[in-house]
Length: 83
Image 1: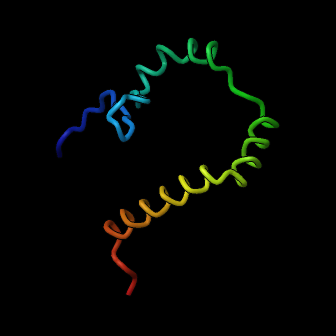
Image 2: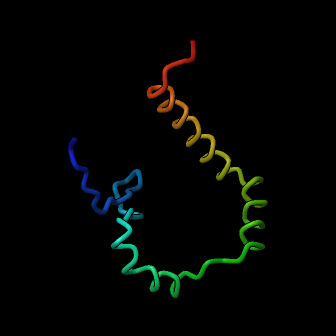
C-alpha cells in the first residue's frame, strides 16, 4: 500500500491569489494559540445572527447554490446510481 504524505495546501481564488491554507494538525498546533488571540471565536448568539442574515443575503444564496450544484455534479461522478 502506498503512503500518503500530507503537506500544506494553499487555497486560491479564481484569480490565483492565495486566500487560505490547509495545514497538517502538527503545524496548526504551532499557531493555534496565536490565531485564537488574533481572531477570538465569536459567541453563539453572534453566529446565530449571522446565519439568520445569510438566509436573506442574495450573494450568499447565489454562492451556496453554485457550490451545491458543483457538489452535485462531482458527487454524481463518484457514486453509481442505485439499481
